[in-house]
Amino acid sequence: MNRLYHFALSPFCRKVRLTLAEKRIEVELVEERYWEQQPEFLRRNPAGKVPVLRLEGRMHPESQAICELLEEKYPDPPLMPKRAEERYEVRRLCAWFDDKFHAEVTANLLYERVHKKVQGAGYPDSRNVKTGAARIKYHLDYMAWLLDQRRWLAGDAMTLADFAAAAQLSCLDYISDVDWNRSQVVKDWYAKIKSRPAFRTLLVDQVPGFPQPAHYSDLDF
Image (tube, rainbow, N blue to C red):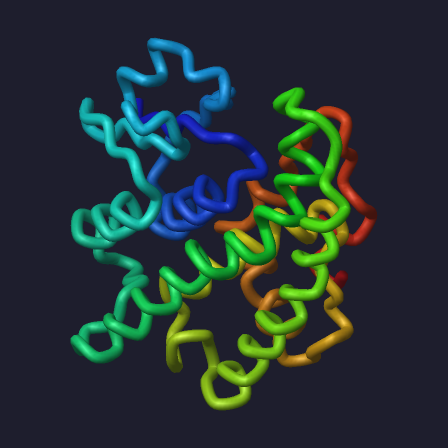
């Protein structure tokens, strides 16, 4: 049985989960307390990070590498375009959300509000929370600019770039840190992603001590 070692509110794990579900690849989800750095987990990934996908008996860490491996092994339905320039744009946006968005927004909101408590690492730093709340506005506006020109973030078809963005935003939506009224085009884009069958397992996630907000699993917001 294929197995994904993950944490429910990890955006990188969610990106992989969306990719697996979209390609209809069955996996067993194993919740991993990766911050405890247990020897057994470090043997799976010496970097000590989730996700780690056990696929066909081999361990595969790193979310973007996992998603591109799945794309190559299971090309239907496609999540990468055929033309080199279009593939570049998908990878550029995946890096944008995995790196820039994550560092400026997710780490300052989700990690301060949730991960610190779950990991027993203290209280939220209000300065970081304020920074995240300010920076998400810039990123939502950038997404709106992209979506004013395209059907999806990277072009006319849904790609890994959309999953990378939705993975970050879905975690923040779980703690009600996304102002969906800031941009109708972004809200409409998220509603399309949220309504896909691949999103269903994310909508039933529950993190002890952090109940879902009422709108989180509502397909109509």
